[in-house]
Length: 417
Image 1: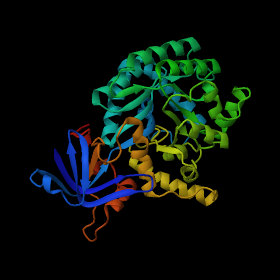
Image 2: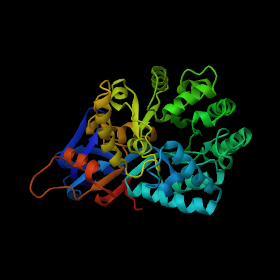
Image 3: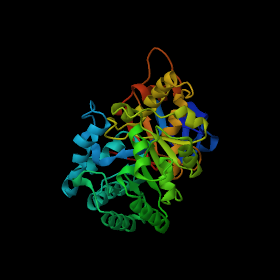
Image 4: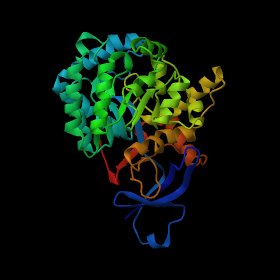
């Protein structure tokens, strides 16, 4: 049993934030026993690890990030989406046929995830089997609960980054077989997005989903071009989500819909029906000018929401910055489209912690029985006034950086990077 003391903040629900000023967390065998404003009598003789005025919050979940794009973070941010993909991103992803290159990048990527306080993630790799194995092994070794996908692309893609349908399916099944028993880094199906996949490929991926009981991550209505192109590519298609339903890819959890910027009412209904997650990637979609998710509207419809860094369209690894950006963009969206309400920092924090954390077990909160996956945050207090723990959390998301993260805990054990 360990007792930690500090300014504690965590979510109970999307509307309810717990904040304890100089409160206590009791942790036993890596799991939270309870949080208290006043320490219970039975714990009075235990050693207290006192972090003073530091903020103690759950670690973050990144539900959409491209590990192979890590070397390009913060580069080519002056390009629009199509040019960014063709001039930089696809060319970089082709390099992962080189396993030594993959090993160097993926080791650095996983360390940087941890450094920025992200302890759970859903990650795109590339079409390359061996390189994707390396990414999975890096995450498994560090004990990071995650979903990792070997990307599928069998059409309308650069010649150096396209598979045959048969190759894509064969390599995907081999990947699923090899990693289905992993303890932490689990496989997930990853068709890049509908226009780069034939329906034959998607349909066969649906059969693999049934065979291995595995979920799917993909890009859904990320841009106006994608929304219309999907309808052109798939005859009779009414919306992006219908393609995945017809292919049998909505039957197994999780279904993770990255971006979800331009959904039709049917897209929304289908994602809600399969209990899927819409992932907002605020910095990424403004960097490449894809658009802004209707976070307030979707939240009010009871949708599952999450936040993604979307490295490298997004330029910063820390999900805490995306909490701030999600609030900021909801205000801009509301200014021009008043049917979309502004979300609060409290809501955005939930969407970065407990909400998507549920995909990885009891993580993302400090409720009883949850893993003690935690960050100790310092350097945000003022000498001339007191601010509440919730205000410290908000300040970290808006003004903090990785230097403010003094310690990181994963399942109760301090983890370095």
